[in-house]
Length: 542
Ligand SMILES: CC(=O)N[C@H]1[C@@H](OP(=O)(O)O)O[C@H](CO)[C@@H](O)[C@@H]1O
Ligand SMILES: [Mg+2]
Image 1 (cartoon, helix red, strand yellow):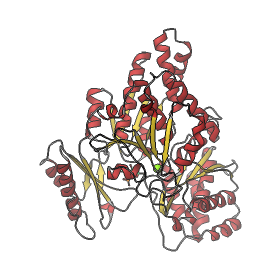
Image 2 (cartoon, helix red, strand yellow):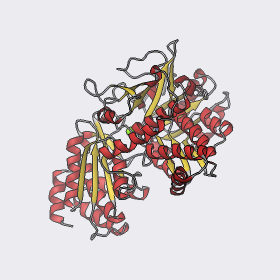
Image 3 (cartoon, protein in one colour):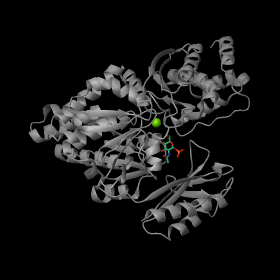
């Protein structure tokens, strides 16, 4: 390592004195103007990680669904997964090191993580459409270069596209070609093959309106449109030409507010969906003839995909183990439907994609989704090999055809991470093949009314949880209070946890009616306020 060069370049990306940032649920995120040094240092870290695992590492500059003024950085591990949790601490140490400590911290990380300096380093970079992203990705490049790493800058890409590129590179092209064209071709080929067999539905069923959150999704979908078969009629809204990123639109807005985005005119029974700012989340929705808004969230997406895959797995007659992975935020009705009606095992893990992804890897077919619309399906290597073999060699026509559908699903699904574009095509293909309307999909089960609230406290670390975040261990008395409140309502459930991305405590409640869910959420938020050191005025009823 050239210490002089490191000193010189680091001085060009100085850390604001006294600023400490925590590695959140998915990386660092804050106001863009506070992130220059973090980007430079994550460039350094990516080089170290690349040398340690002797693979290409990805860095995505994005703050996802958060306001345009924010930014952030997500690191991508060799097979397209999120950065291994054991390195999150190194990331935090590097991001928060004072100027004079930088060299020592790097040396320490190299020792602890057995970084081999003789190995080459390679980093793939991508960024979203935020005004600050271009300059910040230049800072990443400075960090990579000063430690002698090689890089490829993909420029404007969705987060899942960058994950895909990293996986393609590290599997020597087995996963696909590490170019945007490679991504478009792989997905559109699988999609075209799938819908060839769908019964021809009326013209009205072919339309899909997409709210692109004024983000990268719009750019990439327009690039991809020429690859789509003519059966697909997509209409892009909030394409970023007029309005601000994520402002009153996008998947997070629609999910949290349970209402349509601004900028998308919705006629009754039209199928619509929203991406988030970096296109790794998707939710669907429609308005019925009475004007009532229906949200189809990640839980219902997971359910649709599970129904479809389960039928196919039964047809191919293999004993492949399938499971669904959710978080505590999954609607109780979805868990119940999956376990009791579909008879698929459901596992609950801590919030954050890395936990879901990790758990899903335990199964032959692991479907995972967060209620907010981030999710995908993982196929084990053994399952994939078996399916591809059956698709080629199986003599029984019905079995072989089912295996072919599964094979195309494997190619269509972005197995590296949740991907709005890929998920959308998976959903569109399933709806077409099963001849389902958006209303029929929605009617598979009825969501329990629910409410998500947040409360500010002096220090959110006072709340510690267990049982996949469903029970609070500290502060003492809080869980007992929540249990007592929950008992007053029917079909009720509530839990609290410190957010990993915001300085708040999140409160979730569900119950038999919206009024009851709201009341329970409010009562629990008061309990948090009183027992966990609430800040400012007490929470008001909804
Ligand atoms: C209730 C909720 O939606 N939480 C989100 C949110 O995490 P929090 O730790 O709750 O702030 O952001 C995460 C990263 O985008 C996402 O994985 C997660 O689902
Ligand atoms: Mg996102």
